[in-house]
Image (tube, rainbow, N blue to C red; front, side, top):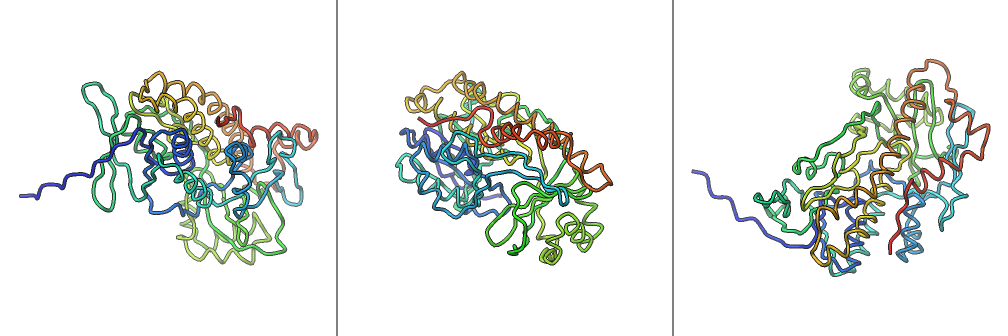
Length: 409
């Protein structure tokens, strides 16, 4: 006879957020700042994950300014990207210049995501209404079966099962969201023809500066400056990783050296396949972001391609809009399904437009690169920007601010 299961730990809060990424922590911070009791559950024991997006765009830096945190935030180690350039062999095209944006910081800050999350959560903890619980992985939802309403979550912790009762559950648990799956929310898959391989290579003083990517024959790679090393994002056709593994690591190193010849003396730092992480790219969005007692935001509501590095900042904009639209209603414990739909109504248009731009770039930038066996030449949209440099203000605004930048009160 099996021993009876231990009684779960029970907690109560006004808003329970699944996922301690940029969207979850930002939303928790803003709700607590408005006096709403909030509990953020994060499945990992810390924020340290090496292969995550590190781009803090001007729209997010503007939020730091509005929160009165910009000066302290910029004291964190970071690099500044003021232009976006693409390298086609010896030919360099400037695609965007952020200096024209009407913001406090007209540049993209490159900062490890763990530093960003540690900074944000440390300020959130100054509000008594904010709680962050690490090593708490949301595994299921709690329901009021009679009214088909979500009333909380179940989570796995080192101490055993945790049940959190909440007036609102927010899914901010990423592109493989447990919350949206358990909530039965329909996903519209838009397709993504690429995957990304992440690895690191040390920097040399003689390396060229870069702020977008390097194009080789049938190849494309972005290098992110991490101070003493490059975080490399090597873009490949969807499903091509298995073939690269079959050809072996020496062939992969040679491939990287062809794309970025200045790294040829350091590709040996990729010593084994365990040094290479596969990001399976998805581009999708929910048909409905909410149901009674439940709302999804960020990648849980709309997985983005890494093209343009805008996913993190779009998720943060979702969080800001959610806090502004729901904060007062949550504080009074009067949240309705119509209130939750208002978040989707506010954020769906910028999501759709951003995904359309990403799909356009997949088709008109990446696909021609992968299909070509000739030395790289810029696709036609880039040649137009090269001929008319003022057009570079358009991608700068789309990448830097997005289609509907949000602001805190």
